[in-house]
Length: 380
Image (cartoon, rainbow, N blue to C red; front, side, top):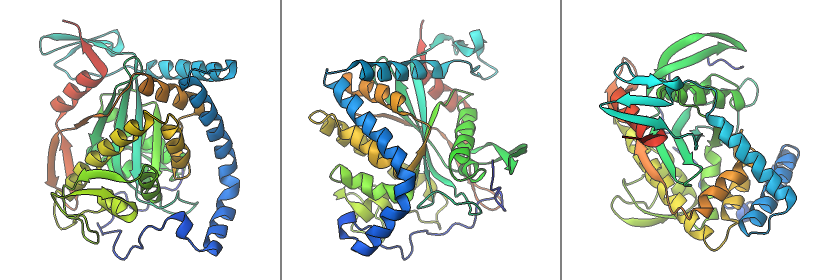
């Protein structure tokens, strides 16, 4: 890995949106700027666009019941890859639990649980840059971390919210050299790496440690410039505001439909003068993701290309190891089971003022119960 951060502690908290420019739809950008953007991105997005075109074709054919041999082969490849994602890792358990078969069977609090091997996990990371870091630039931090745990048999998806200030062992690197682990905020795991793949992988590893070594197979790291375009692509997101957000017309307790800059600020702003501001923001983020997903799933009932289009758009603003075949398989399972929304849980714990910064100490018993509820099935 590269680009070791010069300071392993979080920088002084600031409002990154002070004086920020409102989101402007692409068709409103002056032609000169638009041309420059296209020239800059043309080379790096060429292969992505080809891959996305394949995904669009495959998913639409398969979900419409018109699968070709090529489409079915791609889908089967994705199925095999996803099914193997839970293999090869020994899931941990707390001292009071009795674990068998490398964690596949557990006795805890008088009950026996069996690992649901149909589960696959995707770590979704929202990081605080508007584009991936170039060489020599700071990679940024993960301001939002969420696990999407998907049951490939039922199609159900559970979103596990993990507070950014959660104290966890994070792997540290100097260049590509591993120099050890240190307990620090989860958000800093992203800062050890290149701001792209290695930063995402380090965050994924830290999340796995939090969830008792549960395999985290995939990641999607979205930069903040993708929030508004994704939001607007589904016609805005309707919700009841949990907080009044400065610089917007979003008022606490009022129903609103978020567009553009308002959506961007709703999921990113926090009042840094308040200790639990990161938890307030996480509550808004969880609410927003739940509303966004429900709306997209509703639209997908009449238009199976909705999620394909979202994946294509997200690829312009994200880094991911989720391939075409895996995506095709996962989205097909969700849609064929007519899933209408996410199950949502946030890991419990206590937020305290550390020596310099906020620190969130996770409730280990609560975490393990979440692991059992999401990834296991009670068999007695």
